[in-house]
Image (cartoon, rainbow, N blue to C red; front, side, top):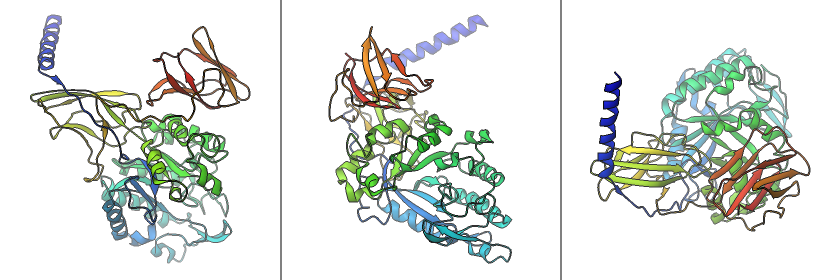
Length: 503
């Protein structure tokens, strides 16, 4: 048996060497100049500047009542027309079905509202008379589970649809912070929510679905008592991203659901509407609204997309395009070897998040056997393709994007897009007064003037992470040795950010 095993390995090595000798190194000169599919700033279909290629996604609320026209009877025309309209602009859709909205009646299907024992709650929310569903009613509960089963059957693999958002409460954002919140009455019971999450997990296979980070609240959801529900493959959206106090409630909610969740499910959200200033200032380069740049926040939370409909009022199209390009995945071809009938391609993700659908390196129209799905930032994969030539054509293909969309990549000869800081600081100069930094025997030492270190990341200007530590037990000082090429890096901590020289 041992002799046979050695013989088998020897034959395998001979085959590999034979293939390798026939492969030619191919160089590619190609940059990523546009916004990638399924990433970036998101606008509403009604935005006057919607006909633009600086976005790839459009967002819309949806009504259950417009689709469920009678018991077990569905009319998908409103969904079809919207998806077609969005796709006609070479964009994909992010859809969120909601029940309650301040100042409006619910979108509960009319046949349920007509039932004699169905009784909604009327209250004041955001200063407006608002209606809330009757979650005691079994037909409403059954109907919504059936709705998502039918919705997934129709649209789970539809390339017009990028992401689905769902939830309960105001705006489907998992809270009724202003209005009549009664668990099991105006808001679904814990038991029903558990059933709902399991249903969603069973019916959506290709399209990712997300819930609000507000679902971390124990008053609203069962995740605190049923922690196993957090293992379900849902993404998160943050509807007040980068507001003034984001580091408190919002960030703790992200932490509750595991900051590594981006590795298998998308992180998205919306710029804060707490104040007009939030909207006006969030994309100011380098500083944002409250001292952290948008690019820095995107890296920390690994954001793939963010609703920013009002940004067209405050920012140039060029700045929106720049911000959009910084989000999500970016593929870099590190090596491309090709010969007759075979190619080997090494791909690196130099973005801030994975691609959440199957995507394949394709040579001369033939796809690789390996998928780029969930390739993490800073990680590489070697793809084997049963096609090649001396003059091959390499593309990246996915069935989850529109036929008119293209996944671009950095070629072998190209440097990935990097966020350039507006100022360069020496190792002893401070960008943030919360801590100081010094060099000690070749190690970088951080000392907190207030607060504690909990996370430390260092990125090169190419966006590649060269040091990370996110399980620090609240230390007032922290030191580490940076094994990195000499040059400028961006140091990021939970207390603030700094640019530093590594030489």
